[in-house]
Each structure stands twice: as C-alpha cells, then as structure tokens.
Image (cartoon, rainbow, N blue to C red; front, side, top):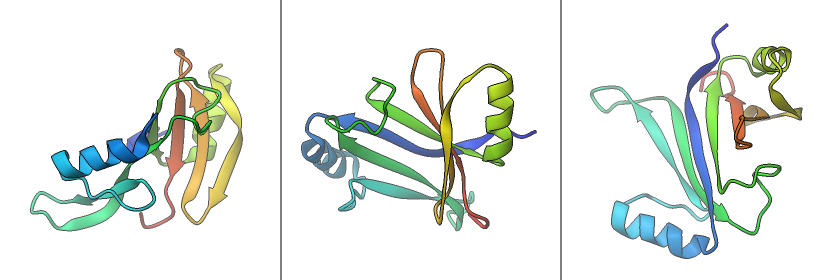
Length: 128
C-alpha cells in the first residue's frame, strides 16, 4: 500500500501572525492571502502547472488547531487512501486520532508521532 505521496501543506503558529505573514510577503515574496497563507501550484520541469498544490499558512498561537500536540507546527502529508492508511497505522499501534473528516477539500485524518507532534493525513479529492 502506498502511504505518503507528498507534502500537502505546512502550517505553523505565531504569537503575532500578522507581522510574521507580512515579513514572509515582503522579504521572501510569498503571496500571502487574506486567509493567512499561500497556495503553491505544482509545475512540471518546464513550469507548466499540473494537478496539485502545497499550502503554507501562519496561524495564531492562541488557537488550539494542533491540539493535542503542543508543537507550534503541523505538516500535512498527501496520501493515496486515508482510510486504508488509518487502519494500517492503528494496527501498527500508532496514536491515531479518532475522526476522519470528509469534505469537498478531501479526506483528513490525524496521527501523533512519537514526539507528540500532530501529523495531518490528506487524501485530496479526485483529480487533485
């Protein structure tokens, strides 16, 4: 079974997300949007867009979006079949959180790594 197929997003928190977003926009040229992040479109070697994006986002450190982890970041990994992977991880004794969310954005599940970092597993919708 295929497990991780790529990185879908990098999410991290800041005590001053507005200032941090502005720094990344000004100094690194990241096209930070009103929602607090940017979407990097995947391209082929010639620069032609292909299916897929990687999300980059700065959130507010006061949020509990990464709970139960206390880390200020979370990596979102693209996976081929989130339900099959969750089943495999549970059978391997991993600390898988109890819910799988399904929406127009795809299927999402979470597992804690041995350091307690929350890891997001994302099965994109068909065609992405």
